[in-house]
Image (cartoon, rainbow, N blue to C red; front, side):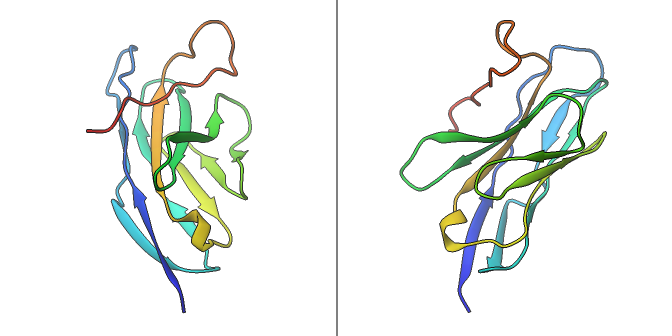
Length: 129
């Protein structure tokens, strides 16, 4: 059985609104068997509904936007079979069948604004140290 290593690294983007604001990913690293369900947890705390993002970084590559949430549906479809489920405190990333090619670093991020007036714009998290 082949196992893959997934790194889930939280990114905190400061939110400008009032109240407690944070983004956490409780699982720093997970290992799952190939073709098993994958879930990466992301919890956030914010007084209003923020803009939520999942980014992926494959080995030797830059960050890539996987999916984003602005408002509306509670399930957001992303690329490569990923989806995220939105609630008032969480934005968990899921995939029904993980594959070796999914081995990467995953980043959850939140913001209270979108750059400019275009709701399709996406924030890129700051470079990780």
